[in-house]
Amino acid sequence: MATFLEGVESIGVACTLAALVPAIALVLVARKARLTVALLYLLGVTLLTWARAAGHWDVELSGEAVYVAAVLAAGVFVLAYRAERPVSLPAAGSGVVAGALAGWLWRPCVGPKLGEILNRTDTEAARTLGLMLVYMAGALLPAVLLAVLPHALPATKRVLDRLPAVAVGGAVGAAYAVTLATGRYDDLIGELYRMATDA
Image (tube, rainbow, N blue to C red):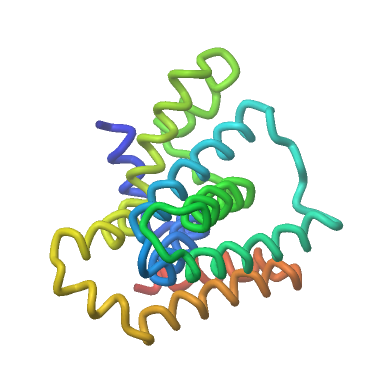
């Protein structure tokens, strides 16, 4: 429970916003597959964050990898938008790939529980992977709740399915891809931090 709560406490911190904002935008775009996209995003970000900490993924975001990341960022939003069914290959693919991309880009703000998880990934693989999932569930709680909302309160589906909500998600997705392609991603994270601390 403490690990989940530490994840929740990290909401609004710039490093968490780097993973959370794309998740919320993707959920807004994925009108027919919100829950699938949100849950698989959670899985993807957990797996790649854990893999980086454990030393299984050490690809640097530089050179050609920057353009690959930008294309992936744009592609997952298109796939999520085009998903016609709640459970489909485009929905699953966009969620997992977007989450993995976020896990690749994310630089965690280390609290005591997350620090313990990251320090023990090489000696307690299964345990730390499970704890990382719990932490990320807390950190991405707003995106998951947004995905669950139309199921819990069906009237909200009409609002979320309207063009303005989808357009906001698409605009954030486009900004995400452009900032990656132009090398301005770190500037974006700085702006998110400023917005979070000014609120």
